[in-house]
Image (tube, rainbow, N blue to C red):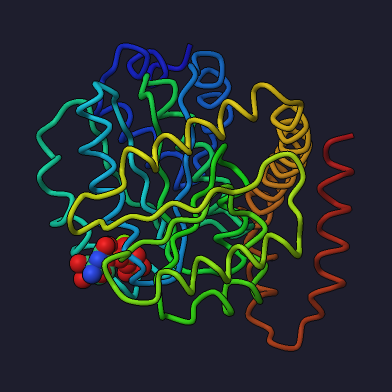
Length: 312
Ligand SMILES: Nc1nc2c(ncn2[C@@H]2O[C@H](COP(=O)(O)OP(=O)(O)OP(=O)(O)O)[C@@H](O)[C@H]2O)c(=O)[nH]1
Ligand SMILES: [Mg+2]
């Protein structure tokens, strides 16, 4: 077994952090590490929290953490920030908000930044979730900032996705346009202390009347993160959703799709790393990059063919 995997199994938190760094760097050891990690995974509930910037996701996660710890559940939080290099401030804010949990060994908090090329963030997030699972956390919470394609990709790797909305913000329309509504397993109306809750709730109910979700109707939960209100109901709905996945074939169906996509992703990543490695150790090839008029299609085609021939 990979030494890091072995240490993770023994609940060594530094090994956990190192493994995630290795994943982020797309280290070539990753596949063998992850394969071992995969074999020691347990049964953590993977929960994604998404929503517009400022909707209160971090505050909510912070309160949910406190609630879960009171139930004696251990929790890992992965904060994914696709815009990371430019928003160090936001991350710092998150850190201080979650600060009270830092000394608790039942909690692990990590923020991830985008690095890899091929939709690498969703991939790295999934791997990191699995590492946390192997360590033995009961719940893995993933926070993503924003409502774009990368959030969609990331939310596809969790079991349960909570979409955080706020009254009177007009974010529903934006979220609807981005196709994010469909990935919500539950709607969380946060900042329920502000006016406009009823209107938002009826907008969501109308939406569900139109789309008529099959099997699972996303519940609408109200929370006030600043006052720690609604956490019990929130977690209850999350657990219900997980049970639904287990009891129906929905969960199995989802896993089947995910497995196929994942294998394709990994193959693409392996090939890319290998081809890139071959190119970058060849001075002559690197020199070609100096020529701005070089034909990228021709280069890609001939170098890829060369790589294939090499393997024969
Ligand atoms: N009134 C009210 N304010 C809230 C509530 N929850 C969060 N806030 C405030 O909303 C602001 C944004 O909260 P965050 O938790 O940072 O929101 P976020 O969604 O994590 O923000 P980003 O990570 O930047 O996208 C903060 O000033 C919070 O104090 C709530 O339930 N009611
Ligand atoms: Mg946040």
